[in-house]
Length: 207
Ligand SMILES: C[S@@+](CC[C@H](N)C(=O)[O-])C[C@H]1O[C@@H](n2cnc3c(N)ncnc32)[C@H](O)[C@@H]1O
Image 1 (spheres, rainbow, N blue to C red):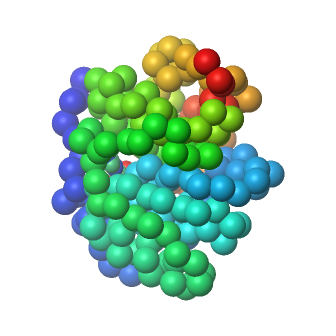
Image 2 (cartoon, helix red, strand yellow):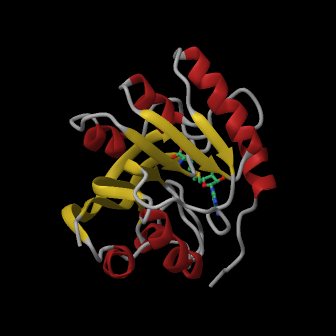
C-alpha cells in the first residue's frame, strides 16, 4: 500500500509540452450531470489543465480551480483564452487549503485520487464548502481498476471502494446517483479503453 503523493513536480512534467494529458473536452460523466443544472459558483478541485472548469465557464458557471500544478494553471489559462472565458485558478494542495463554508453551488472533480488517509480527512472538509442544495459530482477509478490498463493510480490506497467512499462523504447528502460501472474511456492516450469507475452525484441536505 503506497502512501506516497505523486507530487507537484510530476504533475508539472505531465502537463508540460503542447499536448493535453486528459484532452481538452470535459469529462463525460461531469458533462452529463452538469449540463441540466442552473449555473452558479463552482469549484473544480484538482482540475489539472482545466478542461472541466473551462467547459463549465462556457456554460455560464463561475469556475474556480485549485490544483498542485503551476503548469496546469498555465494550460488552463491558455484553454480559457481559446474559449474566451475566465477561470480563477489557485495553485494549492487539498491537504493545506482552507475552505470557506457554504460557498459553492457545485463541486465537481474527475480522477482526483489522494492517499486514503488524506481522502478521509480532507474530502469531507472540502465538501463543507458546498451550499445547502449544492451538488457534488465526481468520477474516480474503482479498486478493480488495478487490473486494467486504461489509466489511474497503480495503488489500491488511492483507488475507490464505493461503500467506503460513501461512508466518509455521504453523511448529510441526498444521493442522486452512486454506482460502480464498467465504461469505455476515450479521453486521451492516458485514459483510453475499458475501465472500472465510481460515479457519484450528491446534493447537500439542510441538516
Ligand atoms: C489525474 S489528474 C486529473 C486532472 C483533471 N481532474 C482531469 O480530469 O483532467 C489529477 C490531478 O490531481 C491534482 N492533485 C493531486 N493531488 C492533489 C492535492 N493534494 N491537492 C490538489 N491537487 C492535487 C494533480 O495536480 C492533477 O492535476
